[in-house]
Each structure stands twice: as C-alpha cells, then as structure tokens.
Amino acid sequence: MANHKSALKRIRSNEAKHLRNKYQHKTTRNAIKSLRNAENKKDAEAQLPVVVSMIDKLAKKNIIHNNKASNLKSKLTNLVASL
Image 1 (spheres, rainbow, N blue to C red):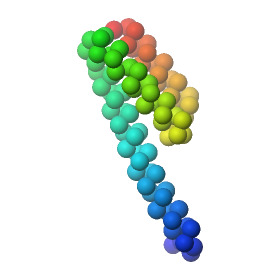
Image 2 (tube, rainbow, N blue to C red; image 1 turned 180 degrees about the horizontal axis):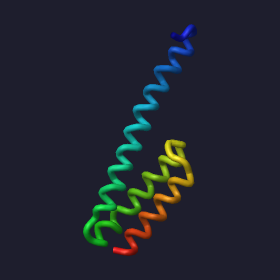
Image 3 (tube, rainbow, N blue to C red; image 1 turned 60 degrees about the horizontal axis):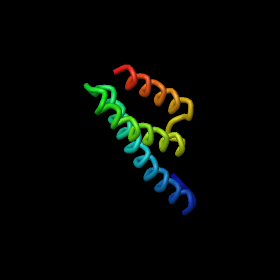
C-alpha cells in the first residue's frame, strides 16, 4: 500500500487515466471495425477522416505507437480506395 499522500493521489489519477484511455481505444477500434465492414465506397469515404482523426489522437496521447497508427491509417486508406 502507498505510504504517501502523493502516492495515493497518483494511484487515483492513474486509474482515471487508464479508464479514459481504455474507453477511447475501444471506441476507436469499434470505428475501425465499422469502417472495414462498410458496404459502399461513399459511406467508407465519409467515415475515413473521422477514423483517421481518432487514430491520430490515440497516437498523440501515446495510447498506441506512432508506427501502429501509421500502419492502420495506410491499410484503411488502401481498403477504402479498393472499394
């Protein structure tokens, strides 16, 4: 158990950040899944900028690695272009 007030506060703030990051990551994964399951090109092209923005935000906050973000964006862009 923590011995200092600051350590207790750090535990609380880390838990809050963990939950927020988990929520944002899961929301982005769901958006990626819906983009991959898009039937027509028009819907996919409308969703792509939103999903790319979400991926960029995750990478900026170090929730996912920058290279993973780049790979995801590249694959999604190619997928939409091939529809």
